Length: 173
Image (cartoon, rainbow, N blue to C red; front, side):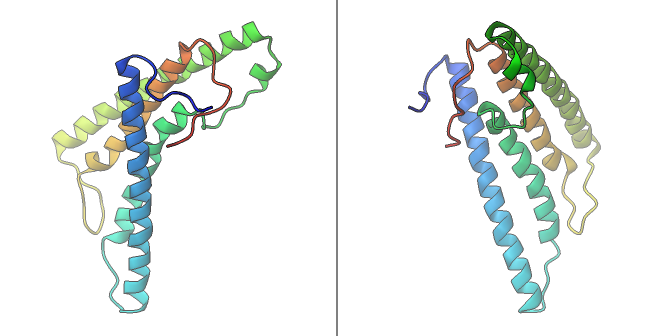
């Protein structure tokens, strides 16, 4: 039976809602990248009219897609994990290790998000743009990195204080 989606206090429900929205947005960006790339191929080879912007858009979209999806992957524990220590430890020790690992991951992600946010602000204040055929403000691309790291950090922090991990990951929807 799937987990109840509206369980927990409102900050947890809000975090889950934002995370699912970000994941949905990642899917939309990925679909738009596929459509844009197909358009580029058709424009280039059938009409001899290549675009100037699609390769840049696909690069920016790749960054956005990855970091919009990271918090949901963390929420569902769908990230890469090496679990041989947890698998061989006693239940009590595994619970302690799981909490320590989640806290370390939360600290790393939140620290990286803090650094990334500072860089976003610096890029914004300096008015920096990408070096591309059609430049865009750098912070418009790098803000997704901050979102992904912050969301992952918050989900790791949440996991550190859960009573017991779920038996299976939630569905992505």
